[in-house]
Length: 454
Image 1: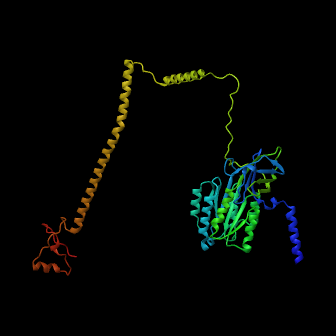
Image 2: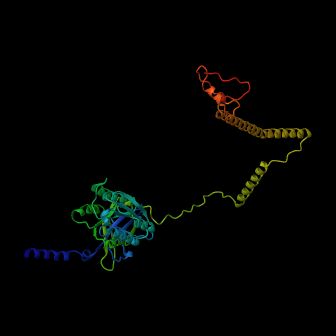
C-alpha cells in the first residue's frame, strides 16, 4: 500500500515538471457554434463565468492554420442568429412542493437575463405537446405565455423535446433548455428518436432535473450528451439561479470572426480560440461542423450605386418639352369627348318632336289609370260579397224563426183556445170509438172543416 502511494507521488511530480504550467491552469471555454460566410469564419465561444477576457488579444487557428481573427461580445455588431427554446414540463406532478410556481419564476428570471438578440420560444408538454410561443425577441409576449401556463396529466417528455428542437429552426446557434420532474409516460417518440434528432441537428441540449435520481436520470443524461450539454440537478428553491446561469452563458458569449484561408471548403474542421485574461488564457478547442452562415445577421450589404452607362444623355429641356406635349394631348382628347352645341331645328322637326313627346306622355299616363280601375273593381266586388253575406244571414234568421214557431200557419205561435165542456167531451171520443184530433189546436180560420178522425 505504501509502495503504491509512493509511485503515485512520483508520477505526479514528473507530470508537474514535464507539463507546462499554463496548460495545467488554463480555463476551458467551449466552441458553441461555427459558421462560414463563404469568405469568412464566425465562431461563438462560451467563456467561463466570471472570466474577463482581452478581446483585442484573441488568437484562432483552423485545422492548425493561424487566422487573422478579431473578437467582440456576441450580440453587438455583426451577429450570428441565436435561438433558445424552453421546454417546460406541465404535468400534474409539477404541482408538488411548489415546483410549478418555482418553474414559472425561473422562466421569468431567464427572460430577464438572456441577451436581447436571442429569440426565445416556449414549448409545453403534458398529455399533449404545444408550441406555446414561437421563438421571438418580444419578452413581454414570452412573460404572458409563462404567466398563463397550466397543468394537466401525463408527461410526453420525448415528444416535447422533439417539438422544441424543431421550433429552434435550422439557422445559427440553437439551444434547448428542458425542465422536467418525471419520466416519459409514452408518446410517439422514443429515447433513440430524440437522441438521433439532437445529434443530426447539432442542437445544444441542457436538462434541468427536479427531484430525479438513479435510473430516472439515465435518459436525461443520454439526451444531454447527444446535445453536448449537461444535466443540472436542481430543487425548487435553486431553480431560478440555475436558469439565470443558463442565460448568463449566452450573455457571456464571444463572437470571433476571421477570413477563411484560400481554398478552404470543408464542412468540418478543428477550431481553436485563445482569449487572454489577466491570468491564464481561456482556450476553446473542438472538431466542429462548419455550417452555412445564418440569415439573421445585423449587418447588411451596402447599397450599390450604379454608374450611368456611357453614351448620349437626354438634356433636361427635352424632359420638360415632353411633359408639355403630353399635357396638350390630354387636353385635346378631353375637348373631343365634350359634346358640341346642337344646331337649330326646322318647323317640321319641331312638329315631329312635339308629336313624339305627346305620344310618349299618353303611353306613360295609360298605365297609371289601370291601377285605379282595378281598385274600383275590387271595391265593388267587396261590396257585393258583403251584401251577399247579409242576405244569407237574414235568410238563416227567418228559417230559425219558422222552426221555433212549429207547424202554425202564419209563422207565429198562437194562444190555445179553451173550448166549452160539451165540445171537449165530444173531442175526447167519437161515436165509432176512434180518437179525434183536438179541434182547438187547429188555426181558427173561417170555413175550415173539422179535423178528420183517425
